[in-house]
Each structure stands twice: as structure tokens, then as C-alpha cells.
Length: 342
Image (cartoon, rainbow, N blue to C red):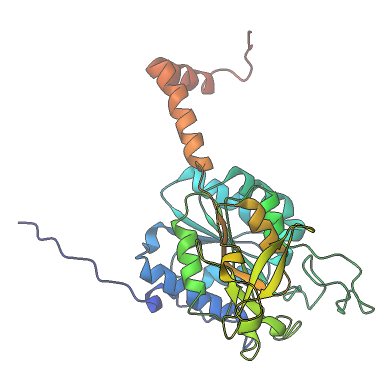
């Protein structure tokens, strides 16, 4: 007689590989790794059906540290590799790990296409606004004036906004989180994993060696409540240590403005309510510098690319039946040349 034995619930440590984690002490990547393994455990992810794909950079070491399948690709090419993995086996849970240089410089083209195609995978962009692995050159997200080995007098490049790039590329799920916020980041990752289609998550990550404290004006404990806006679908855009600040739309400039809520200020009814299905609002939130918007900014599911491809193939094969498959089989085994007739 067969007896069903329930699977043992996995803990985050069960997803850790036997490899020594070798990032710089204090690197934000440690916190992200912890949050990802916690998310996998809480969601009961099957290691045999989970794949992490990376390109080049500090973040790209990620696949070595997770006890799942993994692929360490070349610079900027994680997205097409992950697309191939998903097309070959749509049942796999695919995660892409990339940095701001890997994803937005040499990999910018590939990022655009995986987002517009809406491949069902999670794309985590570790944004430390610097090239960490290659010794601190300025990156596509580095701020104007950033001093680095490649820009000693200050960068003259206008920085890219990862969230605005994602929205402009047609992403259907766009979110942002902070590396060290373990009470918030796993929840965002869980939402991303549950979403059908490409989930793009920008994670603000500190590089303690080459760009230490770049996010301190937003993340230090003494300023975080007044500098961070945690958005939730259907709830007013309120923030502040006393929850006395909010956002409303300035009709003249069609931009978001901060107002004080309560006595002598605006009523809560005057504030915008977060709607994660509104792409225009998501774009406005992505542009905010003070406060910085965190959470799921945009989420509108659509059919995923690999399912559309599978459906198309099945439709074509179904229309021709066994005869169609036989014709293809014969073609592949025919002579080296053949004639295609209209």
C-alpha cells in the first residue's frame, strides 16, 4: 500500500548552496540573497524547478549561492538566456539577477525586449548606481556629477531611471524596494513571483566600497519615514513619521506635489489613491525624488510570451495534424537543398 507522506516545509537555509558567499563585508547583496531565500521558502518553491540566470557583475554571483539550477552568462545577456530557458520549459520558475550596468548598459537592448515580450520571469535589478566589480566606474544610473575613476571631474551623463525604462518598454509589473528592508522586500518579491509575465523589480542596493551611502538620504533610520512613500493599491498616498504628509496632483503642472495632511493642510480626501493599474500614475511615482516611492507601482497582467508561442505552435500543428509533422520530419531529413514554392 502506498502511503502519502507530506513534504517537509523548507526553511530559507534549505535554499543555500555549499558555496562560500563572497561579497564585500556589508554589501547589500547579502540582504537581497536573504530576502530571496526567505521568499522561496515561504512560497514553497521547488529547487528542481527553479532557475537563476545572471550576467556579469557583483550581483551575477547569485546563482552560485542558491541551491537551485543556475546559469552564469556573459555581460548583459542574462535576459535572452532566461527567455530561452522559459521557452524550452515553461514550467520552470525563472529569476534573472542583474546590476544597473549589466542590465542598462550592454544589456539595455535585451532588457527592453524581455519586458515588451512579457516573458514569465522575475527580473531583479540590483541598483547601486556604480560599477562595483570593475572598480567603481560610473554606471548608467549614476547621478550627474558622480566622481569615479572614469569621471574624476564628475560624470556629465544624465542618469537613467530603471523604473521609467521598464514602463516605457511595456513592462506589466514594475516595483521598487530597498535591500535592507526585510519586512518589505520579501513581500514585493512574492508579488513579483505570483505575477504572470515579466516582473521587474528595482532594488536599491548599497555598495560599501565604491558608492557607500548613496541612498542614505532615503534609507537612514532617522529620515526614512519622511523620505519613503510605501504605496499600496487602493490606499491614499500618505507618508511621514506622523503620517501627516501626502501626495496630490497639481493640475497646473500635471505633476505630484507634497501637501501636509490635517490641521491647516489638505484633507485626506484630496490625496491621490494608489492605483497600480494606472500607468500614468506609475510613471509619476517613478519620477518622484522626494519622497522615493517603494512597493508595486504598476501591475496589469497580460498573456505571457512563452504561452503565446506554445499556443501558436499547437495551433499550427493541430491544423495540419500528423501530416504536417510528417512533412517537417521529411524536410529535416531531405537533401541539403530544396525549392520553396509559393
